[in-house]
Length: 422
Image 1: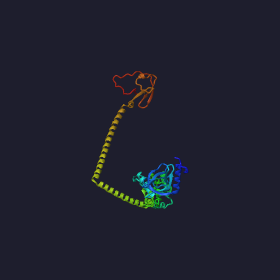
Image 2 (image 1 turned 90 degrees about the horizontal axis):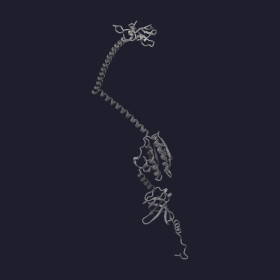
Image 3 (image 1 turned 30 degrees about the horizontal axis):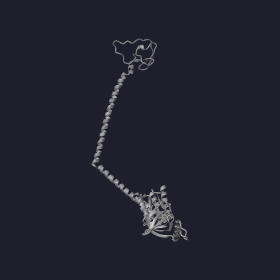
Image 4 (image 1 turned 135 degrees about the vertical axis):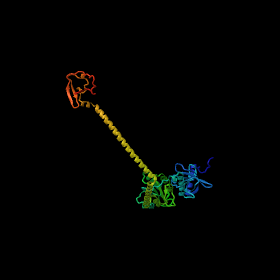
């Protein structure tokens, strides 16, 4: 249908949307709004998109990444929320929405809710499990304090440590303990000590303050640094009534920084007193044990069993002496018998010796090659020979010879080659 004459020019959807956007944003100044969070979406961009509703109506809401980065608590569906922001129009859809710049949970403070949410999350992951907590060293060689170097807490800890154990070696790791970036500095200090193994135990903490002041010790980055530490950690945050996430993760929680200084080292005077007492007890125990052993030994010496054992030892010693004597006599007899047999053999050998035959007037003829002459045919006239006598040797020359004839009725000459009577 044609536009009637005199009517305004038709508006496009974009033009109308922009008019409405201008009216809303110029008319409505930033305002507070409350409602229940539903349809929450948290994309990778870091923005948050959700709906705020009450019993009858609803409005779309958005929180940009910058706002979400400073949010202490975690948005959840069903949460009663109080928000501050500007009503705007999302032009591409022609929808109005509120862009929130601040958000607070209703019914409980933002920090308290954030603490509850972080505690629930880390507890499910096992960071508070008592079974993983490490024992503290009895007498650490070096103690590290991860705290502010200008606060009262560091002075309280140093005074307690050095009063109780003057030889203690203390290393202060200076960090901020409140404000923007404090949690990151605390976590970095814990990691530094572990990377270079600079201490045997560390105290992480600060003095008292409001929940906002102590918030760095409730940050997830600090909790995970304590959990990953290979060095035992004592948490000393605030006063006795203050409980932080760091307290729950640490290996030991001190109610105050002063209490941490008392716990980390023993009292040297008490320690020396205990050592003196133990030394006296050890001496008395040793004396009593020695006296008891002496009484037991004396009783054994007087007992029938011990005397019988001594008698048996004496009997065995006597038997051993008798056996030794019998063995000596037997050895002497065997030696005498052997010597007599040797004398007989010596006499027989002497009787058979050629030298004894030579002593009775016989001699041995030896050829040039040293061999004995056994028959006259073994030499010829002119051959040189030697005559071996009982005493000395004669050089001779053969003039003639003939085969020897055996006597008819005489016994053969004594044995031995080439023997003849002088």
